[in-house]
Length: 248
Image 1 (cartoon, helix red, strand yellow):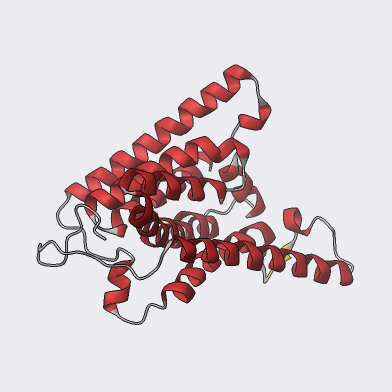
Image 2 (tube, rainbow, N blue to C red):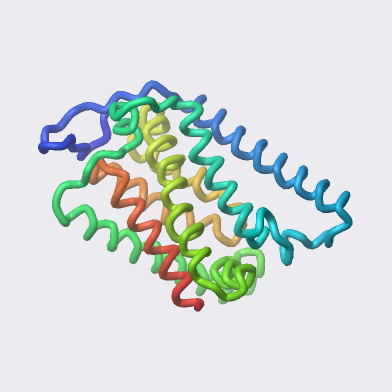
């Protein structure tokens, strides 16, 4: 299987063969959901037995951090862990299969900024549409404001978790891991669309389904175009960090 535009160090084109399949992606996705839901249930039981507030997810602490932000970090870690478990990365060859190939020149990162801008426009148009139709369920949640509220208005931890760690783990899972498997089975655009759909569903919000899906398509195209996971990580991180900074 070959993703168009993949460049190995030195500029030589090569085929990047992946040993995992769509079944591997579905298993990893199921593991993430099962372990995350199990974690929430166990923490809820522990909090209840300790006689703490039942609203621990909104105003409580988990491991010394705001609970919702800590759970976000745990979910992102599960994405990364599921990939490492299924792919069994042991060496540089395995890392390259996930897209960790240097992007050559400035063009890939110019494309990354363009991808971020497209995602921003898509979000703006979706918000405008949801407000025009008056359908509350379609309105995206103000996730950035919620994250900052949970963090007491402090930016450092949200930027680390949501702005940097989250994009890193999600790009490894959805672009480096899921996208090649879908492309291998359904072709380039089918794979990009399916990986974007999975990316969208894992944001757990009806109001985010469409804008995240569009952003996922852009990120998938960016990965296929540049042959490196780094530009998509940059675009994803810029999207999240800028959202946090604007709210702050």
